[in-house]
Image 1: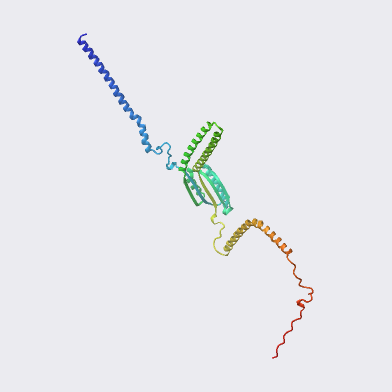
Image 2: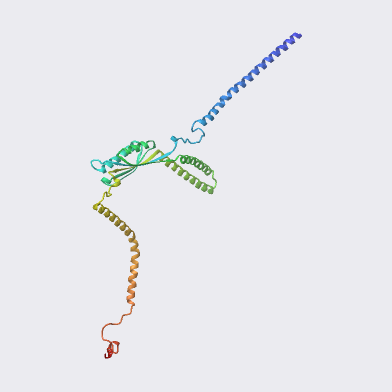
Length: 328
């Protein structure tokens, strides 16, 4: 092969090497650009999560509680006193009718009656009901009860138990983990002593867990169902039986009531003291009787006051002679 042939071959080989180098370079640059383009796509969700955690409520941490107003645990309690009109001239019937209406309303609202007390007759009739109503219906239900008659008293109280609820949740989770670890150790016990001690420990931890869970259920019940104590009265029960005005009869009535009250207090005191008086008075009386009889038996007899006197006694002496008076 001549020089020209060798030169052509070398040139062809150089061109092929150049083409291969260019292809490899283009592949490397394309791979780098592609990986660079993919990098933001992979990091973007983490960036959005970091930003969103600062703007969206409740996403600051995995276990952080949502303490917004509508997410707080609040216990509502209310007390209400309503005066109702009588039915067919009877205050007792009016009070009973209002109580039946309240019971039907709380049942329809998804609650129940926790207590029912009826007392008094006619003018001083009263009905005290303890109603448990869902918390969402608390305010509306109080207003509804007040509309059954003339409202005399209203008292509404709230108690925020959000922190206590969150604390109980954390303590329950921790206690459950402790119970599980104790059970695992119990399953690996090899001696009787270890078995007994671990059983006692498991029982103690389970009791603590049950107590915490009971407190959590109690709080859940108080927050889910609010308590309303409503008292229906017939007539003006606040002044029933109290004398009004002035005059002899009013004073006589007031004095008689005070006398009856005083006698009742005195009889109550005497009834309380009677057992003590019997227990202490009977022995003391017996001692005094025995002592008096003993004194009578051992006392010497006194001298006789009547009968003949012995001779030579002082009583037989002649009376004294009066002395002569000198002549004037």
